[in-house]
Image (cartoon, rainbow, N blue to C red; front, side):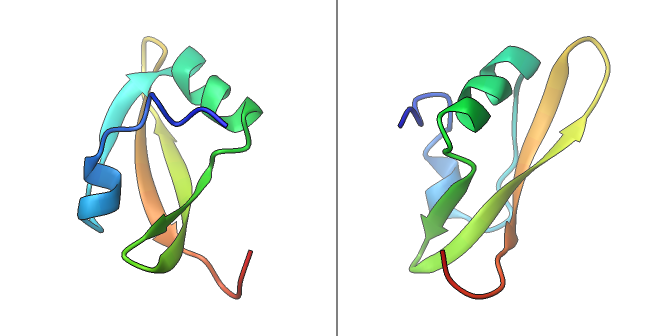
Length: 66
């Protein structure tokens, strides 16, 4: 499980977003690291694609449990 591409801000703030390359995002998905625990609550990482191979990563609450 490789979360090295995720900034610490994801665990510190609910509304934190991060930009990264599409290749970095694919590595997170391939490592099954698209679900995290933030302040005791499960969150699903979501992506907003933009141009030039860059994506913006955010979070949304998950229903139920993992």
